Image (cartoon, rainbow, N blue to C red):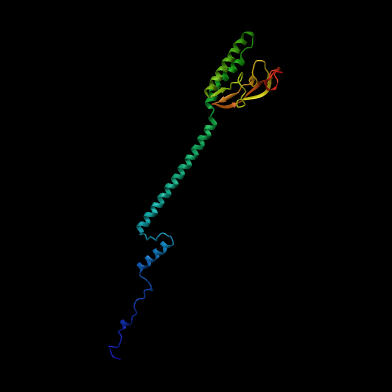
Length: 208
């Protein structure tokens, strides 16, 4: 065979197959395209320095979180202790203000009960009661108006009906136990008797 008909060895090489293995850059682009189609974040290649920097940031955030958690736990414990102290000593001032009144009552009970002392003791008890009302009033305690007032189930508790010739039906005519409000809220209802129909009245207010 002549030389011109003889094929050069390099000429016998087949052209590159487009479907064959791609270069490294093409592989990266293909991988990123597949991840984007699947909704994944594209892969990121970090240098050693960037990796160490991220580890440092993660550790710093972790330490900050632990410090914050510890501070919050200490704050919670302080709040709980303060709340317990408030519950235990909420009435400390009130009790302190009541102690002089208790002292005056004990002095009155310890006094000699001869004829000349009774009047003085009675006057002293009236002063103690006035002092007690003053202390409790400063805390927001006020008596409920009852005698002569129209019966009000929100502040009165009726335990009986008394016929009255002078009071209208439904009026409080007797107070068995005084009621009180604390800063506008009913602390104890007044226990009362209420005026009923007069003996000469028929039902409906018509005279028989």
